[in-house]
Length: 176
Ligand code: PRP
Image (cartoon, rainbow, N blue to C red; front, side, top):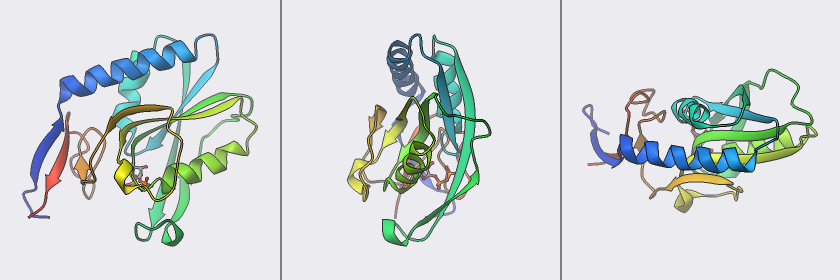
């Protein structure tokens, strides 16, 4: 990657806003009358999470979790550890895990296995970007914003070495 990364916009602010609104409408319908707990998977989901939460028309509770993963892309060689876990008792709750992107699927697979143990009323997944072509472990996605090609993307929460998370659009990094 060059110092001045060359970005190609994939989804602009308007496209993201429309999609977030559609996802929020769907989630609001599906969880009407239920106690929903939205869990933000930091940091990549931060911007998507807050925009989505504001568009929901049902009352929700918000929680935050953060994981780190080390190693290369293959599932067997990657180790996921929790650096911040959900801070409250979630048993009996309808839980929706919200992430910015699912790439290999390692992170979400780990989280689903972890939270399935906790006696929830339901456990589902919402993700803005689905990089399906790069998947090495299958994960169920209940709410999906965009399917994206196998390219490195930044913006709207996603980073390149912690840069670009605050861009209002999603862009692919052009590689020389
Ligand atoms: C990113 C992203 C997802 C995960 C997806 O997080 O936010 O949580 O990778 O990749 P996977 O499907 O291959 O597991 P990252 O570990 O880069 O941390 P960040 O959210 O703090 O940027």
